[in-house]
Image 1 (cartoon, rainbow, N blue to C red):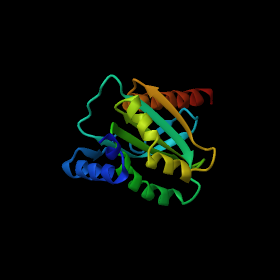
Image 2: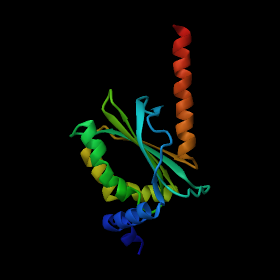
Image 3: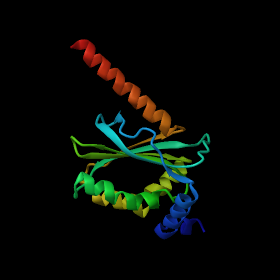
Image 4: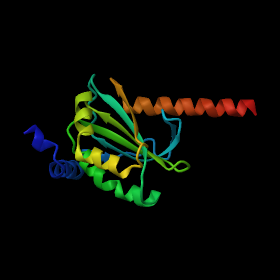
Length: 173
């Protein structure tokens, strides 16, 4: 039964059900906010999806992946990312994802929150994750796993770090 639960058509149906019932939502939290990520790039958040209501357990983990797409423009990739979004949001353990882009370097970042590290590891073996790796420039994919973490806390922390760096630059000028 668990194997059936992770196949793309099942994930898609679950996502569509969640979307129609209001349990999968597009959030305005963090939209257009700049975030300095662990890879030292400046990302601008353009989409935030989440399961509602959020039930935070003690095992939640944050997963941040960054990469460059091998093909298509920024606009085309933003549009194309809607398809895997529906597969990801139906995957077991998915809680939320923030989509961001660094327009200067051409790198993209997906910042996820999973119910557990085991759910994340299952996602990393999925067709959707493998397809993202195939669409990326070879060698450009980097990732970071933060067990027992909250995505909202991660974003707030990265925003504070960015704000402090901006203040330091202004005080030196």
